[in-house]
Length: 222
Length: 195
Image 1: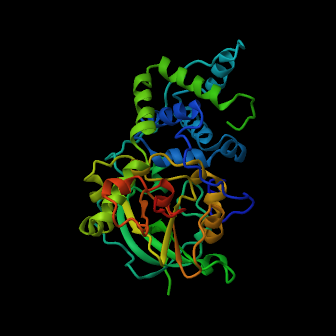
Image 2: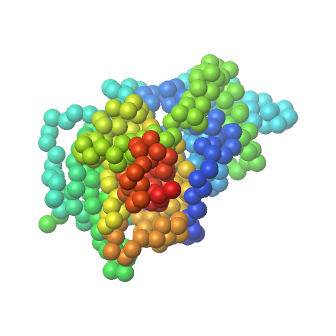
Image 3: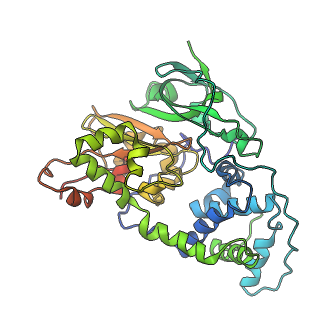
């Protein structure tokens, strides 16, 4: 899906913040609670599904994604996963928050959980595949010019562009199906290198980008 | 989720925690322990120990570059966001810099949680399009003949940069070198400086 989360190469963000060596791990206390809560929430859904969590972030609207930063989107994404699987009722968090600030609002009843029917076969994302990789190190490949409807780890900025396979990585659970609880569907993963002029045109700074791409994202290029 | 409300994230977080704790879905003590581990134990000092050892032990460095995951695990650094780590070396002529354009994937067990600039839209968007300009804004000016390689962490593979050992540190011990290595150098937005 086309999401605000797919930021590579987009414009209009202004300067990059200058790093501070003394930055605390969590700037505000709520961020620490959200980090910990979100990690633990994963155990309440089905199968600690990292891909489903990333997809929950992608589904946030632009303001929700951006306004309260990284942990703000974790909070909203975690809440979305909990309401998706009916562990929390829609509006339950907002109602409790209003009551915490002194309002008196009715809180929705606790729903009957409706978790996805999914269980991870192994807590790691790594999988062994019987079939050999379709592409070899040194081979020229093209990232498919496609716009998948659901979750994908194929960013827009490489779609349709030609690169070279640099490494074959361990085979992995496939995010595009796993995020939707439609199976692990493991795939070979490749580190593919792209030259900057292939991605951004003749006036680009000279450099290269490598990115890990799952086998279904790739096709052979002559 | 998209309805605008005036509730602060701090208040929403407190509400969410209450709801989950009340129903015994989250153990508050476990939550405290998880947070404390990332505030005090799991941070860039771990990666600095790996780098300093690689600088002083050529055989370790060779093994580290060949199989980062296994060699890093020898020091006990393993776990979520580091099931497969690739270590790449920065030199006088090649400069690697790491990003995650789609979210903010980062090798937690060796570097801790990512700093704010790593999660900033400007960094995520721009470093794959104009890395030399971005690095200069962040205080790192590279010579024109240095080859830049941006590593976009789009899968579960994680990247760790082995920075170049600075000149003038030949007399320093491994333990002393650990104190020089910075988080930013291990992501590739800075170099390590001699004291």
